[in-house]
Length: 293
Image 1 (spheres, one colour):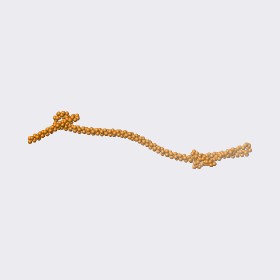
Image 2: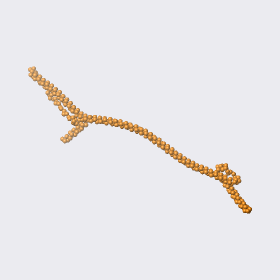
Image 3: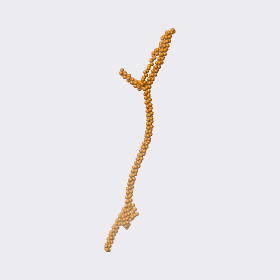
Image 4: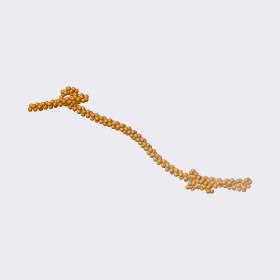
């Protein structure tokens, strides 16, 4: 029993020794890894981790520290690195989102500038359209005034046309009256003139007849005186007295009666056109008669 127990004890001791040796080897490797990792840390990480774990210690001091504690140091370093990694990822995401946001902002700014440019163009276009509208309104007012003036002129012209039509009707009536007068008055005038001429001839004839009768009476009285003188004893033979009154009475012209024209005859119109037409027609007839002869 004692030998077996010793055997198991020796065996356990050897295994423990091996484990210690392995552990010591592992501890050395862990220490080396720790030192190597601490050397690869950046300055900001070292500054932060130096407040938590002894990073700046050398290998001799760290070799005295238990490997479990060193593993805890590793844990702190890993936690810090993971934390920094997460922060970096968040920052990168923020940066990416910020860049996207900036690009989006730039795009929106470009859109805004484009909209502002379009708005300015539209403002200028609306101003020009408003100016044109104002010009059109002014022109419309002018055209309306012109239309009103033209309407007034048209009304006045219509009134003038009515007046002119009435005057024209009056003128037409006057012309018709003048035409009828031109047709009737020359005939009546010629008739009146011939009537007055006949009257004058009759009066002249009566006056001349009276004068001849007076002369006849005188001649009769002279004859009676001559006869009484011839029969008187105191008659002196003197040359015969010539009686000239009989010769004067014989030379008296008889009255000439003019034939009165028909009032409805148009051959006695005394207008220049009709006279010229009559004269030309008479000349043509006279020439035709001469040619026939």
